Structures are given as structure tokens and as C-alpha cells.
Image 1 (cartoon, rainbow, N blue to C red):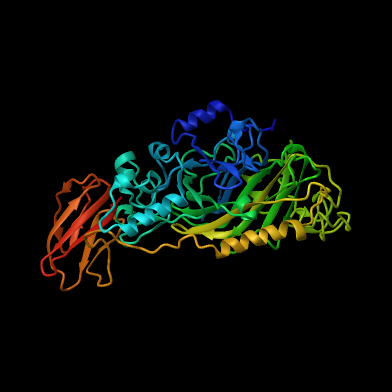
Image 2: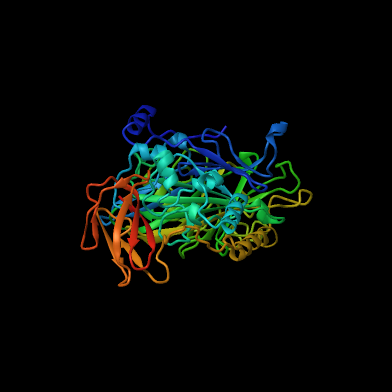
Length: 556
């Protein structure tokens, strides 16, 4: 059984949760290829949130009574930065039964809080399959008029893109800022699948969700909130090579609250368990930006002992800035962090007590500092663990145990309203069961898989579709720019700009339910200060050109 460290009394946690957002409960599996992995909606994944691993390789039909094998026990996100007053802000999830750090739901720009009702609405995932998107595109190409809602797949209708009117009408989910990516074919900044818009997905299965770090107290780390929204997209491809054994995770970190953050770090916490959790060895590669876990023996029980690889596939430029490993035990230097300062030290590439990682031995107490633990090739044991070159757990040799590691990228500057994008890839590098000796060769076993997967991602075309607008009215700024409205979203005043030959004869404003709203226009501006926030449609009539222009906008 995995060992956890409880930091706060459950009564205190329950009391604080009752004041703001409740802990997220949603889960879903990404399972389109040879991997079945559970996603949770609170900054963690790859486990059931209780005590069981759920990163299954190879994927099996559990209804037949077969017990699945897992290569990862859990994973989670850590983010931290320094505010303008030199204060540390940090959210670091490990195991949610130690406390929560993230909550579901988007933050409205400029807001420092999120209501518990919004967290609850977004405590869900938004999946889509490539087959569903292809069917939608085919329907668009075959149509001459807008599509009916009843003809579209639920996952198309419920894609959580900006201004999705279906979600607002059916679930009271109001999306006022950019959220899930979509192709805005009519350029109105509103998701209109009935008029030709479509989700921008990756792979053969995509799953979108959104989390924030301001929904409640950070009960795991004790850190102060950064004020960030993290838009998450997990995806996988069906393939006939190692890509079929890979999953991918895009993270867009947006500073939604006021104030800037310097020295921002983004980290992926990984608890790898290749079958048995007690025989883990770990290592990293500084050139290809990956961490990996391998068994010290042939105990997994399937043909080809798997090596689990997690890679920073894409970052804003820093790549893998440090790699730190620790174990499931008590103590400060080499075990799970106890507070925000401990999380931050690991992110910066230090041990939990502030000591530098040093080359040789177990990385502690030496004379040559480094930011990368065990970055050598396990197959080369010539150095005996005495120097940085080919320093690995095999070169010591070390005693295998229940290992965790943290992959860090930073430091960056994260300014208010800005975003940083990261992509994590998880891959499986198989070995030959008959010849595996517990010390894999990165050059021949791991790097070829990483390079193959990277080449695939760099060349795959996830959006081969072209736009076709189905609306019977002009619903966008076309090449003549007849009408434009701004700002969108707006807080109070909506301005209208028209070309000289476009004379407005009448304006009609409709809310999301289709009700006509009274408005007054003055100097080509509409005062909306007393209107309810939401998604509106402005219908603009013209005399000379005999055209009707339809504009959608968000009032927040």
C-alpha cells in the first residue's frame, strides 16, 4: 500500500472547503490506443484518487477478469512564482488525500475569486473523438444552410469554447473568455458549430478540462495562490508504432488576476511504479528533456520490460531546467515536500533541505553541484558513480525502492493576462524480456522511441479541414469589413463601426434565449451597463445593400 503524509486535519480542510469551491470529483479515461489512463479534475492524474494506479499498459479488457499492469502510479502539476512584493506563490499537487491545490473552472480576467457554483459546473471533462469531428466536417461540407442542433454530436455541441450558447442555455455555463480551442470560421469570436465552426482537437481522442488555483486554500502545500487558470488538453493517436503507446498533455497557464510573476516554474510530479512500486530506478536526459523510470529486474510480467518516459515535448524555451528524485519515506531532504518552501526548492533543482544536488553517489553531500539527478546512461557503469559522466543508479549500484521525481522548467516571467504553454509526452520504451539486465541503454532503447514520437508530433497535421460558413446572414467581418463591433467581450459599452456605404436602419439585440432586448443607441454606441452578463446577438439591418449583419458578443 502506498504511504501518504497527512498535513492538515480533515476537519479544518472540510471547514475551508465549505467556504469556497468544493474538491473536484470528475474523472475520465483516455483510452483510444494501447494506453488507458485516468484523468482527474484537480491537477492530478494517472490514479484513482484513493490508492490505485491507473496508467495501464498494455490496455486490456478488464471485464474478462484480467488484472491490468500499470507503469505509473500518479502524476500532478506544480506551479510557483514570485509576485511584485517578493512573496512566494505556489500550488503543488501530489496526492489529493493529502489536500487539494487546484479546483475546476475558469477564472474571469481580473477576478480574484471564483464562486463555488462555477467550480461545480466545470467539474467535468469535455471529450471528443476524431470520428465525431470528421462527421461534423462532412455535415458542414454537405449543407447549404446552418446545421440543426439535433443533428450534431453532443461532444461537438458541448465543446467549451468561447461564447458557447448551447452550454449557456442547457447548463448555465457561461464562457466569456477564450477557453477550448476552436476554428472560428465566421470570425465573430463566438463558437458557432451550427454555422460552420468546429473544435480544434489533437490526436484521435482529445479531452479538455480547465482548473484554477484560487478556488480554496492550498491544503497540500500551504502555498499562497498565484491567480492562474490552467487549460488542459490530453490526447492520443492510433498508430502502428510507439506512438500507439504514448499520451500527450497540453497545459496553457494563464495569469488571470492582477500583478505579474517572476521566476515562474512549471513542474510535472511523477510517481512511477512499473508493476511493483518497490523496485524503481529513475534517471533523466538533459539533451532530449526527459525523465524515466526503469525496473531493476524482469518483474513486470509481460514480453518486453517497459521503461516509462515523461518528456517536456514543448516549453516556452527553457526545456528541462532540473530533475530531482525523492523517495516514499520520512525526512526532508529526499522525501515528499512538507510545505511551500519545500516544493519550491525541488522546483529550483535543490534537495528539500536546500542542499545542492551533487554529482556521484546518491547526489547528496558531494563537491560538484548539478541540477540533474542521475543524468547518465544506466548501461554504462564504468564511472562507478564517482563523477557526473554516466552517473546513474546502475553505476552506483543503488538499492531500488519506491521513487518519485519532479521535472522542472523555468524560470519564466508570467505577466497578468499572459499565457505560457507546455506539452508533456508520456512514452513507453520496451525491452527484450530475454536479455534485459535492469540497466537499459538510453542510446539504443529510449532515445529512438523519443525521437520517433517527437518526429511524429512535429509533422502530424491535426487540422486538415477548411472552413465553410453556413449562416444565411453575414455573421463576420468579411473582406469588405462592413461592420465591426468592439470591445468584445465588453463590460458596459459596445461600439459599432460601419463602412460609408453601410447605412444602419434598425438594430435588434437578442439574449442567449432568443428574447428581444430593449436598447438605445447614441453615437454608434450601445449602453449595456444595466443588462445581465451573458452572450448576446446583435442584428444589424441595412438599407442600401439589402444585407443583414449578425454579430455575437459577450457582456461580462
